[in-house]
Amino acid sequence: MFANFLPKEFRFFDMFDKQAAYAVEAAVYFKELTSKGTIDEEALKKIRNIEHEADEVTHTIIEQLNKTFITPFDREDIHVLAKELDDVVDMVYTIINRLTIYRLTAVNKELAEFASVIEESVLGVECAVKGLRNMKNSKSIMEYCVEVNRLENVGDVMRDKALAKLFDTEKDPIFIIKWKEIYQDAETILDICEDLANTIESILVKQA
Image (cartoon, rainbow, N blue to C red):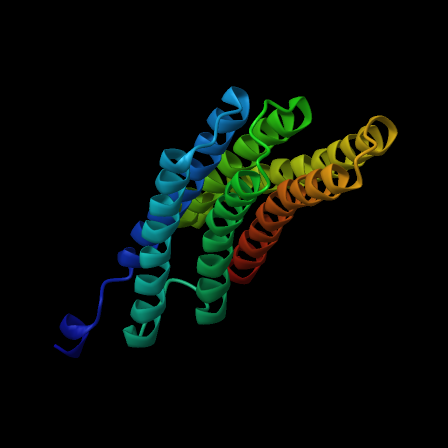
């Protein structure tokens, strides 16, 4: 009878799926904004709303973690996974907000390319997260994780090329500082996705 009072395990997977969906929504919107080169107050409001709703899901996961006796995998891993998924959305919001503050609203080829890679990486993370419902399909989950790691390496190269071009072609030091930070923020999103892939791989190893 005591088990009837415990929260259901599947709620964790439902909430992870929601978090991943918000991360994808943020990444897709970031790509859309960079391709148009137009970031206004309405765009900032939209990404802020996405970030707020993602935060709410994260808070729910943490609350559920504190109340649930039986969890689908280690509590520490649940906490880390929830935090890293939230970090993706937070970082997308941060970069869009900085673009607005810095008045960097024109289309930038390098950033648009970054946004495409970020979208691919976040979609890979989403697929890996959804796969955690059925860890017997670990091979498929691992393939997504490997791809996310590969995209992080692509991001490293893109960042270095973008910075090299920036230093070679721009003379305004303030402009250089602004774009250097933006490129590094973009690569940070890919770093977080790689952290997520590593966390998921760790979960699979523990559950094997």
